[in-house]
Amino acid sequence: MTAKPKFEFEKDEQVTLGDVDDNEVDRVAESFKGRSLFITGGTGFLGKVLVEKLLRSCGELKRIYLLIRPKKGKDPQERIKEIFQNVLFDMVKQQRGEERILSQVVAIAGDVLLPGLGISDQDLETLRNEVSIVYHCAATVRFDEPLRNAVFMNTRGTKYMLDLAATLKHLDFFAYCSTAYCHLHVKTLYEKPYDPPADPHKVMQACEWLTDEEVALIEKKILGDIPNTYAYTKSLAEALVVEKFKELPAAILRPSIVIPIWKEPIPGWTDNINGPTGLLIGAGKGVIRTMYCNSSGFGDFLPVDVAVNAILVASWRYITMGMADANRVAHMTSSNDIKVSWAEIIELGRWVIENKVPLNGVAWYPGGSMKSQYWLHYICMILFHWIPALFADALLWLLRYPPVLCRVQNRISKGFEVFEYYANNVWNFDNTEAVELRKIMNNKERRTYVIEKIDVDLIDYFTNCVLCARRLILKESDESIPAAKRHMKIMWFVDKVVKGMWIGGLLYIFYNCFSGYFTSTTQVQSIDSF
Image 1 (cartoon, rainbow, N blue to C red):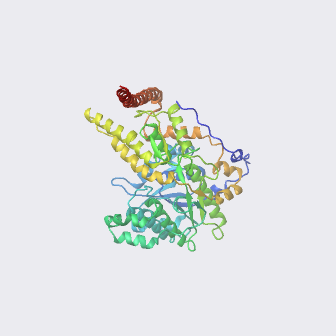
Image 2 (image 1 turned 135 degrees about the horizontal axis):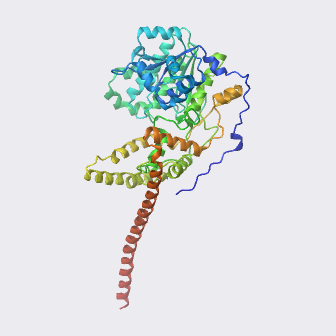
Image 3 (image 1 turned 90 degrees about the horizontal axis):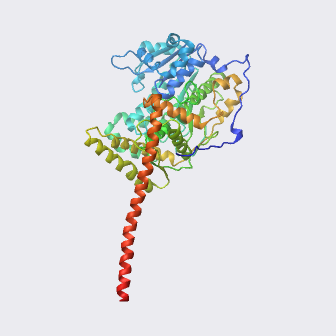
């Protein structure tokens, strides 16, 4: 078993919050009081947490309108009720009552892919008369999304939202949730607009003229040095928002890599295994044993609850202090406060899964390493990913079970294609806006909307992440943890035995090869002597 990892941070990184004065007012919540909001992407990872936080901490808002794609046989409002069955909303339902919060959330049937967002005339009239704050969070976050689809969703969808925003009678704030990783040619990103890689209007027009197949043929040429369609289409969308700065009270918010909840309402909560959580689960199951990665490099990760807090605090500042002299671009990033290398993440995750929260049915004992040379990583992929997967699937086929591991490895390989670009490059992000926000928040606001690094225990955090992924994504019960720990010990023993046999076999082959050579040499020398 591996030793417990240690992480050291400078003392001045720790922030002490002052005592809360009973007379202090939550000015963030006050800025939402009596207002109606329109949110796209409210059923996604970030969107769900945003809605939950608004209902829990800014409960005196009037209404939240959520854009919901219609599904056959399902009323949009019924889908809202389904979303609220997620454990994420248990705390706010207990605090405020399910009926009350459901009365504040209204489904608007529509789709960002459709002209006019596919919203009915009646619903459009409601939005125009009532909404004063808009959060556009809807996006396809698949890095391998075909370019035409990504343009329609991320870029043209933003244009449709801006068109709607221009018709809202009481609009005070339009927030476009972008990403800090959309201008990848800039290694130090500042809180300012950047030129897009192409004219977004021409790209949208071309994608409307051409078919999926025709766009796919020229996709690589269009993207150029940009590694994926997500970053490309997000940067185009930013340019559309910048065009409207003079006409609309709009701002661009750039969260970095959003990861599971740190503090509230459920530490470690997530609804997906993208990003670092997916790496930990794959490594914990024993199916990821090599990665092509700059082990000393780091990514900029931000817990989703901190990202949402930053969005709300920035919204308060924009709404109450006006947009005239404000910086219209704000970063929600963490690397200026805390840097954790890829090697530290893997070391920490491995220790947590081996010692605290093992997973059920691990294929092999967690192990492997990061490789700085691609050729070595490629060889290890063949030896430790594909050959074992082929062998295991062949065994499953003989036993008349469906083969699965080759399919898993294929998904891992596709994921690596995206991951490797980010894991072998490092970006820095200016977060002046966040620093300024911290200065003007009172103690009550700083406790309610935590946007600072405060006593982050990374081992506890990753334990919560793996535990929630185990419960909510993998559907593994806590009662199975003792059995999983026993299985992990068995796999540790098997791993050592197999490695010993492997080394012994190599030594045996080495001995036979060279002992034959030395024997032949001795015989030749004897003949010469004779």
